[in-house]
Image (cartoon, rainbow, N blue to C red; front, side):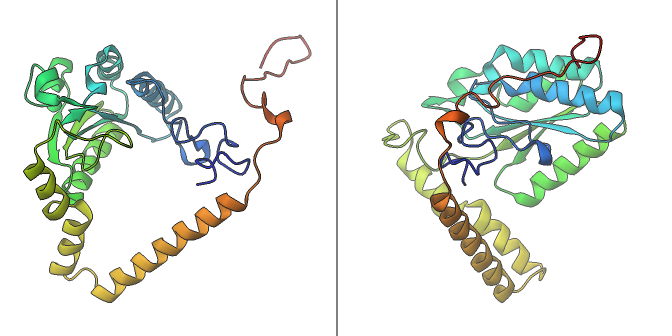
Length: 250
């Protein structure tokens, strides 16, 4: 939250914002302001995991619009031929800004493209938490067995506009209301948990209250944090290398 507020206490000391936020301690190499910029980063991270035998699996999340970038082919093809431990997750919400997926793609689903790389392509209901979990679990296990990447397409719906003030005139109003009121992923998962007696209504309410307080505390922390000093302007902008006794960069 502090990072989004541009404060010095943020993960990237206020320089990342929402577009370039990163948390290396948790394995998050960073969001990318370049559409389709995550594929090669994910492939590189997966190559590192494979060479170092860490057991880690790289995950790359992208929208249907980014699926039409050249880096999609480059990143996934490289991961496939080297059998890298990676998962490429397409969040297909039907629109790349205002362009319908059906208008911009020559195939019916992004997962269909996996056959060109000789890897599994799976399409799941992106609003079904359990279905997404099961697909991801199988992909992770496959990657850790050394069998290479998987392409998972999560079909969902973008309830709101691409940006603040987007009138969304390109959408069908009936479909919009249906998805917003009847097809919400959180509502569906809540019903799943209750119907399978995995949790009680009171326990869910306690979770809601806990999360709401955590968000409120995060906002308060961000608001009360200081902005970076002008002297921080060039800090962490470029990588600095240390030299050994021979003058070689390390």
